Image (cartoon, rainbow, N blue to C red; front, side, top):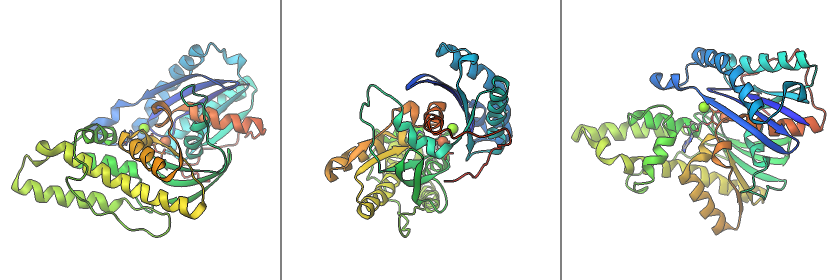
Amino acid sequence: MIILAIESSCDETSAAVLVNGDMRSNVIAAQLIHEQYGGVVPELASRAHQQHIWPVVERALADASVAKTDLSAVAFTRGPGLLGSLLVGASFAKALALGLAIPLIEVNHMQAHVLAHFIDDPERPEKPNFPFLCLTVSGGHTQIVRVDGPLAMHVIGQTMDDAVGEAFDKSAKLLGLPYPGGPLIDKYAAEGNPLAYRFPMSEMPDLNFSFSGIKTAILYFLRQQTKDNPDFIQQHLPDICASIQHTLIQMLLTKLKRAVRETGITQIAIAGGVSANRGLRTALNQLGQEQNWQIFIPRFEYCTDNAAMIAMAAKFKFEQGDFVDQTVSPLPRLSF
Ligand code: ATP
Ligand code: MG
Ligand code: FE
């Protein structure tokens, strides 16, 4: 079984080739054009996908030493994501599947983030067993997912407003850092004191989250501090970043603990772009030791958007014969 997978939901154009269980390639072209606008500009993202898609697919095939005619199926991200971006990957995959007369597989991007844990990785021989909980934290989503099987997932908690990745990026913007600021907060936080400043943590019922309040709290905090000292941010950047990051991580882990209490499940995975955050990885590992949980953290390459995770999800669908026909179209708000 040889699957070519394409990911184009946001601002990364990616293609991967999975040969039986072996992820032979995972090519990712990031779009740097958005940095100057402080966020992803949908129309520019769509155009950049059009420019990147052929070269990225050709590289992925070449890196895997696979010819187009060897492919068993083509997979693509159907949603959720930006419509113009999704359309590029979907149209490309449909055309290729039609031309080669091979099956077409649609993949839910958020399920794929979770299934990244099943990509064979010599450094991570142990895979989660079902059922497990996955905290999926990314630029557009914050979910606690109960995973009963590769394609049987239920969202048991989620954000009611901003995603935690958005909270990272918006906080970074307030600090004058370039987009996407999440990785930069992570970097400065490593040298700062996480208890230097306190920000209020919003209280949400059940297993749900709210991250919109914290950016307002940070905005007022910075306004107050820079009134007395215009250089406050430059002078205290590591402490501010560490404190913001600490607050966001505590909000995530509080709900995770509650989810474990309510479900009795102690196998815990994290996924999505924010799972690349070193503070979160360390805090989760510590909590796991304290609570006797088994923790699963993907390698960095499989945290942010990538086509390898799409290929992995497609493999499970291929095995079940779960294919779609040429009438399929992208769904920007696809859920599960
Ligand atoms: P979604 O998956 O919800 O559709 P997306 O695909 O845009 O959204 P991802 O690529 O999975 O999101 O993740 C991107 C997000 O991850 C951005 O908000 C980015 O700032 C954040 N991120 C990446 N690395 C880190 C890090 N080290 N620390 C904190 N945040 C990070
Ligand atoms: Mg991205
Ligand atoms: Fe994503």
